Each structure stands twice: as structure tokens, then as C-alpha cells.
Length: 117
Length: 115
Image (cartoon, rainbow over the protein chains, first blue to last red):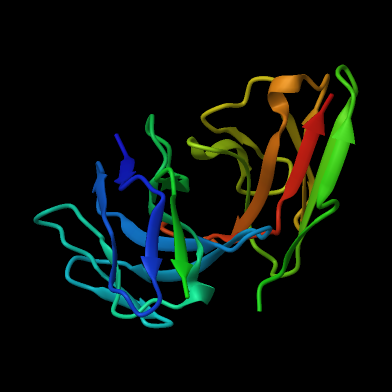
């Protein structure tokens, strides 16, 4: 079946530190991969996505590369800011299970990032 | 920009009450979703809908029902609220792509407390 595993938090960093949040997936088909971000008190926002192997998604200094050989989609940022403090969710989009033809998202459990000045 | 709105940001209800959570999207999306978010469990799919009057169960449909009478509106109903339904509820919508691997757009969430 489809599932996503991401590193457990919380992750605490100083401003300008390098960030990596690991994400690996299991999929029955050829999924698209996403990172969503949730700022305090808000809903989820799409941060970046990649639709096929070796694609790199990027936005706001964050990057993630779709690695089919390692079934991974790790999120990285070279220099984090206090404003990056949030919960980050890795997700994959594929057909639903049990022969369904409908698309749905499968989420990891989220990683809380706190950046100190 | 896609806009998904939810009727309430915070809601307090009593055990046994019938609760309605409303979600509206303004981008003519075919698909709409209801999730609940709990600490340590991430997001879990309750129900989704791919067309008016159509619905499919997600991973945790027990204790919930849904209604989609108009394309832009998707309602989540707790027939008899219980304390274990205290949670953050998130609505999302998406446009149907040919490969069915759509980006979902989320509302701000409704934090429900059942006493």
C-alpha cells in the first residue's frame, strides 16, 4: 500500500543553520510527492512538489529531490530563519487503495521545526 | 488564488450534540476532503467527495457523515459528538487531473472541543 514515513521531531535549530527533514515513502504506483507546511494556528500550505523521479521541487529556499531508487523526498534548506518555525508534512499523491480510481494524499506524521534567533 | 474557508475556527460542543462543520471552496474544484489532525498522528482522512452527492469513506469514517449538495460546499456531520472527537478538522479541495495526482488546497481548520 501507500505510506509515508518522516523523521520525528521536534527539530530545534539556530538561525542560519542547515535543515534536513527526512522523508521516505512506499507506493504501489508512481506517486507525486509533496511537502506541506503548517504555521501556528493555520491550515496546511503547499510548500513544494515533484511529480516524477529526479524532479526537484523548490520554494522559499527549500528544496527536495524525488529519489525513486531510495524512495525518498528529503526536505532541505541551507539557512533557516525564525519565520520557518512550523510543522512540516511530507505527503504522496496516488490512487486510493482497494482498486479505487480516485486520487488522494497520504501524509507523514509531521515534523515540528523551531528556529531560535 | 484558491480559497478554502471553514465556517468556524473554534467550536465548543457538548457530548451527544449534533455538530455541523462547513467547508466552502471558490475554485470550482471537483474533489473535497475532510481530515482530522491529532498530535503524534498527523492527518487522517475521514471522508472525501469527487462530485456533487458523491462520497467515499476515508481511513476513519466511524462516527462521521458528510453531505455534498453543491459543488462548492462539503459538510462534515458528527451525529452525536463524543469527547474522542475533540480534534482539529481540516478541509481541502483539489481539481481532477488526468493522472489523479492532484495538489490539495487546505482551509484554516476548525478546532473542535467536545465536553
